[in-house]
Image (cartoon, rainbow over all chains, first blue to last red; front, side, top):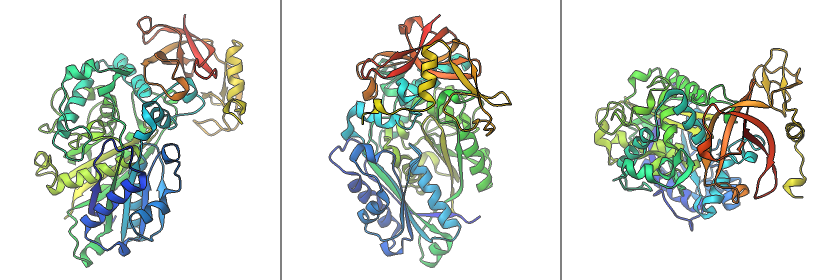
Length: 388
Length: 128
């Protein structure tokens, strides 16, 4: 199967920009990616935009055409929505277009405006990724849903809040010198444990922040890259997607994520690799427990054993399997529709050597991005490899 | 039209049944149970679904203590939210107890309550 080569990436700073509109953020990220790729805008054959709650946050649907003009292109443009996996799903569509020959150059991005909704408003906006009848009407929030998963995990497998705190500490340490990250500060286990409660056992520092931001990448076919002399040191060589019951309570288990398992298995098969080939990961750590479930779902840890990975130093920057060297959603920030694209952008820079944490993966050849929607009712995984 | 005037066929009747102490699920010939509304069994796709009684008492599988709510629950916090199992179906609902009195595995009775913020009905669990 042909690979989709990454010609350029771009990201706005992630953070609190309540005055910036989605089109403004996307225009910047898309422009950066196009400039990084060194291509002419007219060369772009298609645009995919990941966004989750534009209708709620800024009264804006139908973002395909809007964002095409925000970056100054005429190409067919489509918005993709799969809650917090919207960005990753948009990447998946772009990869398919390049692979099936429909397009030689695709711009794919994601954007989310959240701060202007306020904390309660954003909590409400995010909640619509749950089941309206049997979850939202009962008062569920996303911190609350992941808190249910964490509490169940503790009951079934053991572990405690202190184990999870190490996930947050690790990801903040990774973001500390990342100039695009929302939190460029290290934190301590004590700070995580003493933070205000959001939905116990999830506290403020177990939770990814409310984030405004956008990310984009330019994908090209191998033939196009060769023909135009583009440098494409990284390629997306595998993609996989999984789906599960929307409502957490309807899952067979509250401590397993079959959508991640399916997406991972399909992405490995697609790229022709196994998990043992993977050097580092960017996973969907919207809450500390989510990173634990992700590394288990992707097969790197047995069920019930991932919770000690950060505490034991196995997933830290100097560990055997670095996870979320960008700072993750937890510290880099989580502008939900942009997150899956930001993972690609950050991982590409990590491979290329122009990321602050590139030294941690100097000889790496294979990386994995994992982007989840809701309580992992949706999951999408991409395999990134150093191009031959 | 306000949200409260919109009916949700299947869901509203299921809540009424919970309030009357006769909760039910939908069951297919293979015995898969799920909560309505359903056109087909989510497990096997069968459209041969019938209402079957489920017990009013169940087991709490997990809970949280919610402090940061959605706008529809802004006056309700903090509250305990749980997932409980009743035979083969599980429900999410408000645990009517202080957090310190709740634990995974607690026996609960299902009932109907309402949001203190909006007055809308919601599923409740009383510690048995």
